[in-house]
Length: 124
Image 1 (spheres, rainbow, N blue to C red):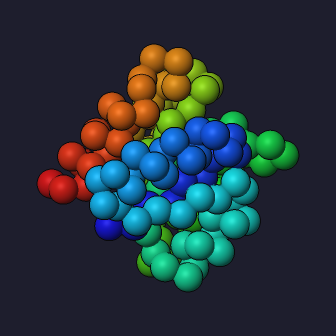
Image 2 (cartoon, rainbow, N blue to C red; image 1 turned 90 degrees about the horizontal axis):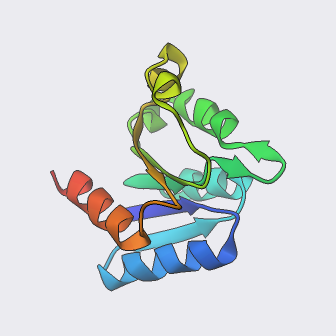
Image 3 (tube, rainbow, N blue to C red; image 1 turned 30 degrees about the horizontal axis):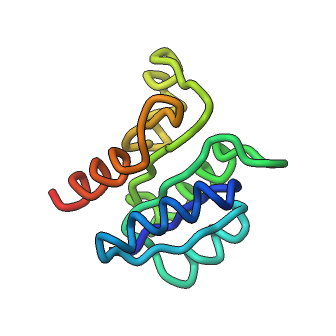
């Protein structure tokens, strides 16, 4: 298993990476969408964990670009974000095109719960 962590906050990114390493899961940290795309081009991941709010960029732009490549359309994307995403947005057609697997809201969900949920999803 290989997971790309698209997270501009270095502390949170390292915490996620450490939790994945503890579960023997390979991961790479990408502070920007450009670096994430380079990592994905080099080794297509099993999943992507991403913050929605990225400095200078929208993660949504990155997701649309990612989904434009046929060989990358099935990579599960998990949001671990400080932005609240309401049900109306998640039920929209545009949102469904991005195929976001699950949204975790940082103020309410601990990193351990996020990792456990993702590992469970990917093992099924």
